[in-house]
Length: 396
Ligand SMILES: [Zn+2]
Image (tube, rainbow, N blue to C red; front, side, top):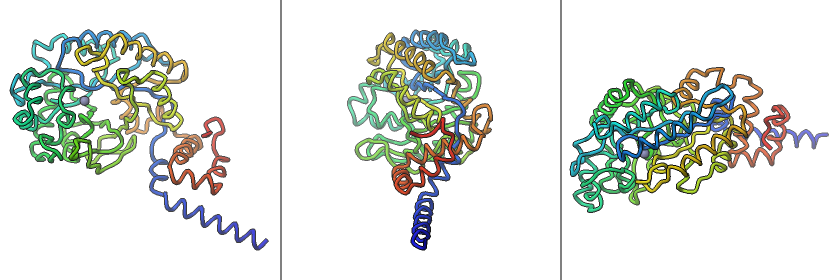
């Protein structure tokens, strides 16, 4: 009897140590909102200025989206992160905005999709680069000078230069001056508002490199939602890779200025061989963990000028929505702006309030924590906690 008591005390102390060691992650996962329904949002970046075939591609995408409906009768929303200006030939700083006559068909197609409720515009950036950095790089790099002689697809610039919020004219990149950042953010928010008639609510930092200063400026300019990969890269390292992570975030966390973070870390790039089935597997994982599934994609999948294929892209998109709804009849479509507001307001229509359901999802989340999950399974803690979960949503 005494031995049993001793063993029990030892087990209790061991479990307490495991919980204490991982308390921060455990609490963060408990606080992270749990979605009541499966949520799927395809997030498409880099639209706006550039080749005119975007107009045809956007119209075809709009028709594709409008053919599908969730149980509420809502069509899927594809978010389009917009680039608002292209430089004039041989000048990185003189810009041609999206409302120049040459881009009129693209803007018209965008506005038609927005009016039908299936395209949700988001701010990507005034440009997909930091203009002074591009100007400096063009002096030293012939391929950048060649691009600048006839600017079109920013996808064709060297990857580090596609980061807008760091100076990657040399590597490792250098930080930008805070005052210039504030001015650039004010300028791009004003341009977006002029182009679309409403201020932007959601922003997607180009190449996911941005800083606390940029974030504060966006928040001050009224941005409500910030799309992230779950961590903030602040620069490019010596090899040109995104680096300098100074913050991590989960869905529903707030930025310094009060904007809501969303996490987008799944991908749907048909050009890279990503199939609808792969996207469906991502939706399954996210749903099991009570998280929305945000799939990152880019305009190049749909544009011949960028090596893409419109028909192939549309077929993949069509198959994705068809298969997703067949697998999840309770699937819901909405925009990132709406998702951000639901998370921010803890909206009971979208966010789970039932404590036992939340506890069950939390168990699935903590089971996936690499070291905690293993320790909790081996110690018997996880099997014990699973007794209190909802059996229909139990992690296998
Ligand atoms: Zn981009």
